Each structure stands twice: as structure tokens, then as C-alpha cells.
Length: 264
Image (cartoon, rainbow, N blue to C red; front, side):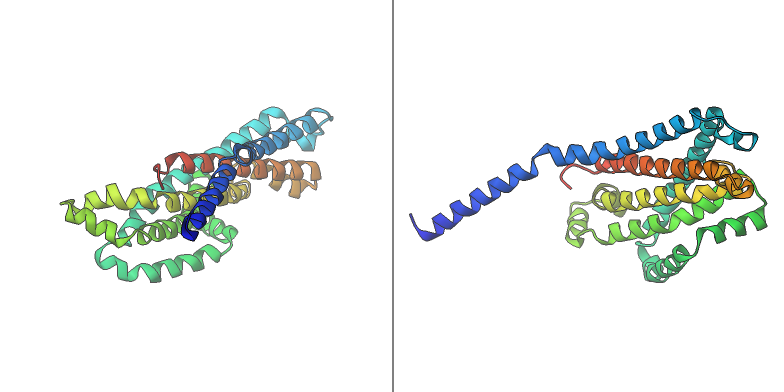
């Protein structure tokens, strides 16, 4: 047996060992199960806490019905804004990678980066001042805040596609739209969904400001806790918002994994 054959056998054994380790389901199961279990534990802890004590007149928002209404309103604000963000960001990101708009993509993304660095509360207050308080002006502010990371990831994902694959598609007789739909977008999906996942978590946290501008949600607990000096109300609101953000992050990760084309 030659020395090269021996080296090939040793390399094969090492690769086989790495495959076994990578195929071990335990780390994957722990990663997928731990986060929702932590969320459920946080929700259960809040319910145990609120149902095991006498609520004063100032703590009426800690009643089960009020907590449920606040959580559903919070999810509504986040979900509607997330849908609007995807509907706006994906076409905009595609447009910035096509034709003459490509030359402006760097400048637009740089400006978007500056906007993302601005405090979210400033954007919320500006929309409340110019468009009045309420649900829909607040959803508009959330949407504008969430567009920036998604557009950046759409552009990065499309720019990261190997140009040889695009040329091969055009060489097979595909139109530019067909190449975009069948080659570029499927390859860019993982990066795009990472941006959506980041935006959803950001918007869930930012939705806490809804309680300050008449949009409702769990932010009302924080607002009431601050105004009345009720620490229990404030803490419950903060814990529930954190739990919802973790839950939405887990759901977005599941969608990200299942929506990614096989083989990528």
C-alpha cells in the first residue's frame, strides 16, 4: 500500500468521524426545544405570579383577561408590521440590484444604516406627532423601522449569488425574470430570511412603545407601571415582551430552516 493510499484512508476515517458527530441529533434537539421551553416557563411564571396574589385597583392590568388582550394586541401590531415589511422590502431590495438602480444601492443602504442606528422611540414619536396617535400610525412607524434590515439582507443575498450561475441560466434561454425567480431568489432565501427574523424581533421589542402612543399592547403595562409606580405591573410587562420576542425568534428560525431550499 502506497503512502498516498494510507493518507487517503486516514482522511476518510476522519471525515467519517466528523459525519457521525455532525449527525448527532442531541445538539439540534436541544437547540430547537430549549428556546420554546424557556418561553413557556416565562409565561407560566407570570400566570402563577399574577394568580397567586391579590390585585389592587392599580394592578387591574395584571388580570388574566387584560394580559391576554395585551399579548394579542402586541402580536397583532408585530405581525401586521412584519407582513408590510416583507411586501415592501423584497421588491425594493430586488430593485436595488437591477439595472441603473444598482449604482445607488450603496448610498441608499448607507443611509438606511444611519436610520437603523437612530433610536426607535424617536421614529415612533415623530409618527405620533405628524399622524396622530393610534394603532395605524404606530404600525406605520414599526414598518419603516423594520424595512431597513430586511432591504439590506435582500441586497446582500442577491449580490452574493455566483454570477456564473446567472450567466448559465441566461445561456439556457431563461429571461431575466426567470433567472431571478428560479436561480437568484432561491439561493438568496437564507440571507433574506435572516433579515426578516432580525426585523421581527426588533419590531416585537419596539412594539412596547405602543403603550405610550395609544396603540395598546403589552407596552401599556410598562406605561402604567411607570406612571403609577407599580413595579409588579412594570416587571410583568417586560417579562411578557421578552418572552414573546424569544417565541417569535424561534418561530422565525423554524420558518427560515423549512423555507430554505434543500441543498443550500
